[in-house]
Each structure stands twice: as C-alpha cells, then as structure tokens.
Length: 142
Image (cartoon, rainbow, N blue to C red; front, side, top):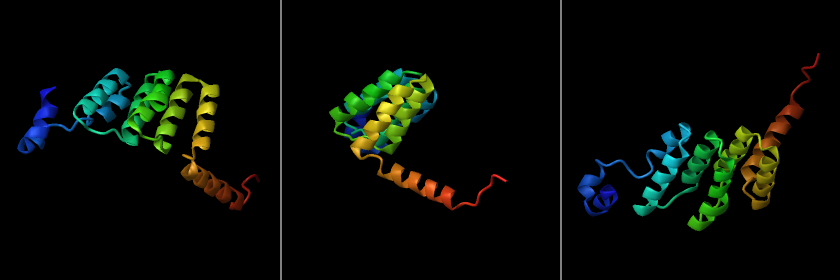
C-alpha cells in the first residue's frame, strides 16, 4: 500500500505506477467482486474519489458473480455514502445482476426505483425513439 502515498509525494514517479482503480474493469469482467472491492478500498485510501463508473463496475462484478444482493448494497449503501447518485449504467448493471440471478421481482423493484429517481430520462427517450421507429416501420407480417 506504499504506492498511493508515493504517488502523492513523488509526482515524477506517478506516471510509472498504475492508477488506483485500473484493475477494476478486468476484475468485474472476471466476476471477482472481492478483488474489485479490495481495489475500491485501495482507491479510497489513496484519496481517489469514486464516480458513477466506479460503482457500475462494482455492481457488474457482483452481477457476474451472481451476487445480486451485494450489487444492491453498492447502490443502496455505498453510493449514498460516497455522495454519488446512480446513473443509467449503474441501473443497467443492477438490472443485469438481478437478471443473471433470475430475480424478476427484485429487477422490477429496481426498475421502478430507477424511474422514480429520475435516472431514466435517457432511457425514456431511447424507448420512445424505439417505439416511434417501430410504429413508423411498414408491417412485415405478410
């Protein structure tokens, strides 16, 4: 754990050290939530502020490991503690975590929370555009 302190005190060395959090995406893809959370704690210890992207990666790691409750804990506990509001990628990752686990009711409840939080304006626009395109398309049924 000496690297973060050195990064802060020795700017000349900072470029040669991997930035805290760089290993988060591979850990998420490999379904390694314990390692992703260890990296998250190291980021915090190094003074790196988490972003919505940080949390979407944590939620994805939990989802890929089929740990939807742990993913929900990120959104319900860790994000508010950090003062970060969930954005669409976080909601998508949470819905994916519930989907992988087959938790349809929990996914629906998360979707409703997303809609109530106002975090769905992009989603609502995308759905409306998709529906409009489908309605405008000629019938392909024969």
